[in-house]
Amino acid sequence: MSSSSTYFANPAARAFLQRRVAAFGLIGAILGGTALAFRVLVGLMFGFLREEIADPGFLIHAAAVLPMVGIWLVARRGDYPVTTIHAIENTGIFLTGIGYIAMGMEIRAEVGADTITAFILALVLFARSVFVPSSARRTVVLGVLIGVPLVAAMYWHYLRVDLSIWRRFGYEAPSQERVAATQAVITVMWWTLTVGLSALASRVIHRLRKEVRDIQSLGQYNLERKLGEGAMGVVYQANHGMLKRPTAIKLLKPEVADPDALERFRREVQLTAKLTHPNTVTIFDYGRTPDGKLYYAMELLSGATLTEVVNASGQQPVERVVRILRDAALALNEAHDIGLIHRDIKPSNIMLARQGGVPDVTKVLDFGLVKNLGQIDNLEKTNTLSIKGTPHYLSPEAIQEPQAIDARTDIYALGAVGYYLLAGHHVFEGKTIMEVCLHHLHTKPTPFAEVGASDVPPALEELIFSCLEKDPEKRPASAQQLADAIDRLNVRRWTRADAEAWWDVFGMEIERAKAPLAQTSATAQTVAVEVQSP
Image 1 (spheres, helix red, strand yellow):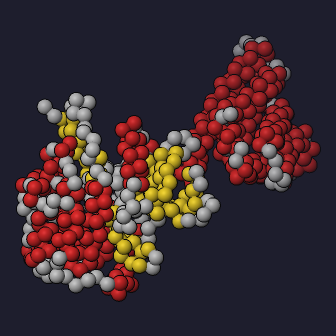
Image 2: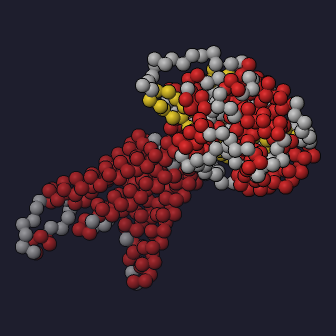
């Protein structure tokens, strides 16, 4: 069974096909009726209405419209199987085509009966390509069914052409058989182009509808709207068809669906699904679309990323930053304990969500670049080293020795997130990726007092700067050790009332900013840079 037949076996898809066939019949009837009305109007204007209505061509024209009316009347009612719907469509189009061909036979050959007839039938075929979901093959078959009687009729029609005008101007008239054969060849040429373009339109529209269909329905999930996108995937808001549970669906982008990306995407799902910490996003399900695209379903979070939080209100209160860093560190510690590192910790991958009526629940997102510490990369497999991550949050070792990174690269990035929250900007700025990377390798972070964050306690500044040490050995040994150090800070607790007050002020502003998906600079995006090794 073809993919098209499989699709229309679905009741909703079959009903859609029937509606589109009915719409095509209505549009065809309206176009044919409008042309009839125009003929009546011209007859009224120039005083030959009675002759026009009595003309056989007018009556045949009216008869040619009736099959389209029939398609509309039949297809708009009832609940037909797919084969019946196709039969209604095919019969109506064929009868309409025969009607317009017969009408063309009433047009004098000398004034271009073949061109006028082929043009009218081309409109019918093009309209069908637009309105009726169809494969290119079915369009070609219909085109041939109409084209054979069209060519035959035009050949016979031109056998009766008046050739006296040739002799009137002193030319030797060709035989009527030659004229008829020539016009038949011309009709074949134009009709072949018409069928080819119609088939191409059917193919393009059919594929676009299929892509939209795959996006809008993934297994048991119905997609509602796009939430955002990252380096590898696009995230949509969805609902589970049976449970009606709000869900987020991440779908792998078609342009990155090479074997390595597919494997990395699959690994992201399987590894993230092992994580159960309440500050890590929860994975519900995993699957493929009918054409093989990978996706997974995760909890839908209501809130804002740290990027959106800083964009809305700038530098964050110390007590809030301490709470975020502690929760994120504990989430990362679970991942590190089972041998995983995130590799892309950044503000847009940490979210403050509202769950169970509680605001500011920290959630670590998007383990799309996870690395299994238990695996040793095969350096003989390629002559390149792959630097992956977001430039503003790359650790020095991720730049210099990306194959040798460990959990402390996440600690560096989390320290950079803490700096970003307290200072209101990245640790290091630069116009290019290379400039930012060089700062990570050689530049010391600017003290908070010099960037307008003078209320940062010295102990917190010392802890964050220890995370940002160039030498991994000088950073906290583990995410748990970092969380324990944060717990020992003498900082006021960030309360639920504090969080509610902040959201009351900035919540609407964040929602408005989410309407158009923001464009980010190259240095703020996750990148994968291939560096040639000697």
